[in-house]
Amino acid sequence: MEDKQYMEYIHAHAQKSSHVTTLLWAFLVGGLICCIGQAFGDIYRAVLPDWDKSKIAALVSMTMIFLGAFLTAIGVYDKIGIHAGGGSIVPITGFANSVVSPAMEFNKEGIVLGMMAKMFVIAGPIIVAGTVSSVVTGLIYWIVGLFN
Image (cartoon, rainbow, N blue to C red):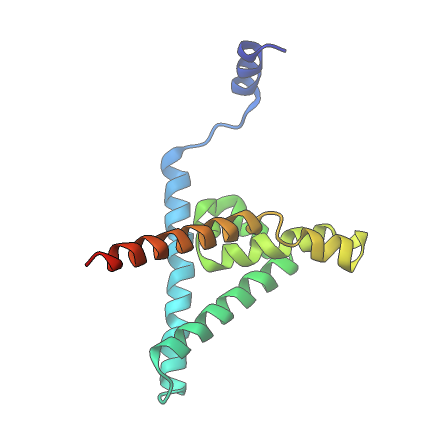
């Protein structure tokens, strides 16, 4: 099939979606996830007044990652993602989903060669890109600092 024929086939059979509706759902769901994280932060600050901001932030991150993983495990997060799109992928809960989903899918192949080997198939490149860009940025700041 040639490129032109393939594109005609795609346009004829692909579901049509409204960009406005898609963006609205992404905004609303992503905003709701962030509001839930903020609510946890407020609750933790009220319950643990002696904790500093960095400890509260770490606790909120752990809670949101747990919720994302748990909702993925029971099949809810994928249903949210169908409607929310990027609104469910961008927050930290989307990271948890991208780690848990392949682990669940390849669990049948065993713990080591299935679940553990495939766990970071989706999230792995993102982690590597983030780490490499952080190192490069740090080196640039260090080199610039040498000349100041």
